[in-house]
Image (cartoon, rainbow, N blue to C red; front, top):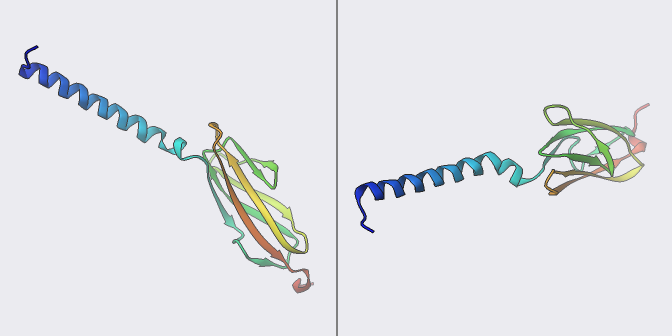
Length: 121
């Protein structure tokens, strides 16, 4: 087969189209390939509190199931969540777990200290 300029141009255009299609698919799916993204904005990890009731808030993206200490919680349309927890006296560990529709999971741990003796009355 003779390699004419028309043939070479056709091969180059096909390769360029294939590379463009691959780049488009990768850019559109990279958020899903990355898996769940979890952020706890309040309270800060390792903080100490004098209140037994605590509000945990943050964001979760690319999740189909979200749980806090094994109990399912829900997000709004922007991926934000806010849940109230009751702390035990002393050291508390909370686990935020997210799972996406492809089965990838991610966990965040939050460690807090509830010191009831410093509570103001």
